[in-house]
Image (cartoon, rainbow, N blue to C red):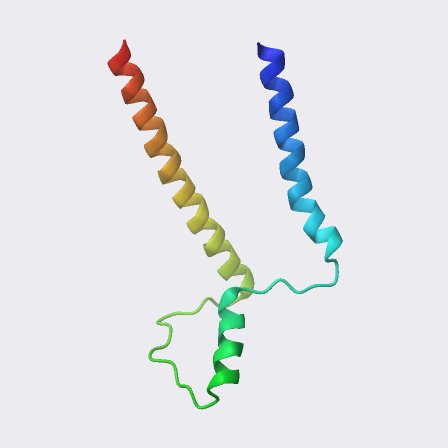
Length: 97
């Protein structure tokens, strides 16, 4: 049984690597931008005189720090979700015993 799970894990790892590398190789000269910039361009195209309702309280000093904060937010969110799922699974297992 252990070899079957190991085989599945290796295949899943290879799939994740392929899904990560393929877009970077296939679209080598593209600029990866966020949806905010695209939305801003569309709004400016539709209504050139548009003024935003509010502005940011604080903006990060560099793009690297902004990326770091975004990754940290994602990691914390994944941690909370995984903790909750693990807690529920443990609680369900404890009820069975």
